[in-house]
Image (cartoon, rainbow, N blue to C red; front, side, top):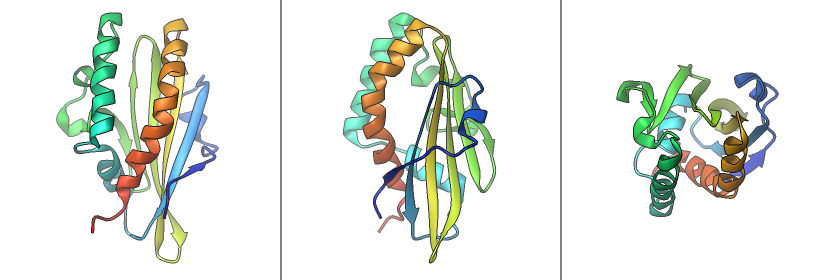
Length: 161
C-alpha cells in the first residue's frame, strides 16, 4: 500500500499548544500486531536513504552558525531517542518525539491503529510551533523537503521482505 497524506488527527494541535502547522501521512501495513514504537523505529531509525542523509548533513551545516540544534545536539541519551529524535512518551498505540529549540518546537506523533483486514494503519503527524521570525523562515524553507522526506521515511514501516 502506498503512503498517503491524511488529515492530522483532531488531537494533533494538543501535542503542542500554540502550534501553527500540522500535517500527517499514513500507510496501511500488513502487520496487525505492529505497535507504534516498532513503526517509529522502522521508519525513523537506522540509516535513511542516501538522499535524505545528504539533506540532513546539509541542514546541520547550514543551521549551526545560527545556534540551532543539530542532530548531535538533540539532548537525549541514546536510550531516550529514536534516531536523533528525543522520545517524550510512548505507548503501544502512540509514540511522541520532539524537541524544543530557540526558533521553534516540534512534535512527531507515530500512531498505530487497526485498519481492518489484518492491516495496521501507521500515521506520522508533525506539529510545529515557531517562536520567532527565524522559526517561520526555517519552517518555510524546510517544508518542501519535509513533504518529500516524511512519506519516504514512513514507507520504511512496511515489513522487510
